[in-house]
Length: 498
Image (cartoon, rainbow, N blue to C red):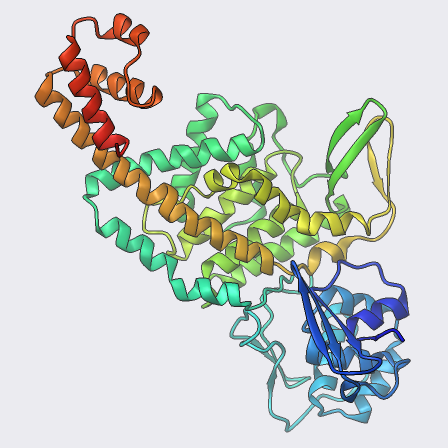
């Protein structure tokens, strides 16, 4: 006999819903004990019969089970609620008006649907958290007097990210990467830190453009570096400031003066008749509301105790999924990471972690993280693509972008930051220290101009520790064999660890 679906799994089947899969599925075992199977990011839980619900045809039983065991999924709940009459909710709540799960369901129904049930306000009952703070990242919350619920969701009706406190994220929180970053800056001379910062800003800028396969002009590079440097001075992000930012970083011919008014998507041509679609953005008529919700969520989290990396993951990836502009979305997505980390003092003052360099270095991993959402999204979108490449989305899609679980994106961003700290930030500082030491040693051997010393070091490193004959004839004919050998050994010892 087959195991019986319960909770979200049963609701999806019962109402024939098209949804982004929840991170876990639950079933009641037909016989025997329960079990748990975890594959990649998907959990399958089999419960023994003692966990079975009374009536499998009653959706409220499955909703209660889901909230109790499967966790929160606002997208699925919003679609289930549309399938149930308000009178049924009223009847369900009046049967147990002070019950924990009836109050949560009552609150979520009104929160997600925007409808107010004709039910008297809850009174003289202890307030309960909507989300368990031990299991989810939450705000301090606002009290809903009507439901006696502490609404500690991060977002709002238009944009409400969910991030679970997984063992991976809890481990990263315990590592206190922001403290490590501060210690690194305190362990080295200020002048070395200043030189490293200049390089890191340039590296972040070039990497961010390279991810988009763009080769910007020097003027655009300089403008983007300046935008990154000034990011912490922005008190408040608005629609207008985002449009201004987009205008700065894109080719002037592709400036936007408002959020996009057309359906956009990411695809590649297989041949002249076929295009492979990688991602489909929200409908243009949904963009304003989604972006308004995202910016309100950002404002709401500015004074919260939530780790800045978690906020940055939800807002930056939320932005790129909404894709509000025709061009520049990817670069703004990565800019938002730096903006949030800087505003929350996660990064030391004036310093940037070249996160884009890590993303570029492991671009397949970056793509895989994005695809963990986009592949499931594409399965649920009904679209038509004309021969001219104009896309029409036929079904309602807004909820796919409103209520995303950003847990994996937070884990990924933490991983990038940790790698950036050790592989780019500190290594660049150590490189500069070794470089200065090498130059000093070279000058003790041969007192050459700085420009020639820089060339010599560069050529030797490029040629695996030796100066090529061609470079020697062109730039260093004046040096004898012993000098060339001694200088090369100096570079090898101090710059190449050999």
